[in-house]
Image (cartoon, rainbow, N blue to C red; front, side, top):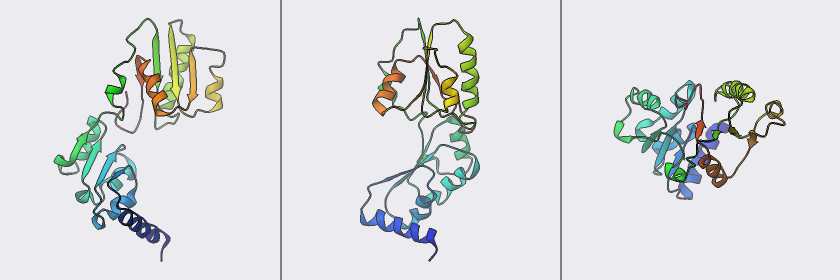
Length: 195
């Protein structure tokens, strides 16, 4: 038997034998392939409307129980594909805004938070340009860029205490850093939801 077919059949067996309550699917085409053959409810999260990712998310769409989109542009694109709109929910970000209800309101210092990877797709070049501008600035700020970064990016701000780059944090600490911030940067060139 073909290795891919074997994998899909094993995945179906696992889901059925373990009586999985529900599946939240983000770009795993095998779940969409299996959906007509499994009873487990599936929620598809659309986070990219380009390339094969959109096509994969639309595969066997009529069997998917719920679709989540993360931007107005994405909602428009998904609806243009003749998806049953009653199955589509828009959630503008992955953070529960109630988690930020205690966010710091003091604007005597700009507290800039960037929660994206340093890739072309995620707008990393734009963040690096911003860092270069901020390094020359005399405004009062703190800049935190979460996630894995290259040594070159880290080295570019060595000795400047206004920058913290490359933190990897558990969710609770991540939310605490966000709550202390007053400017949020989530640039993206492809996901339809930059900020």
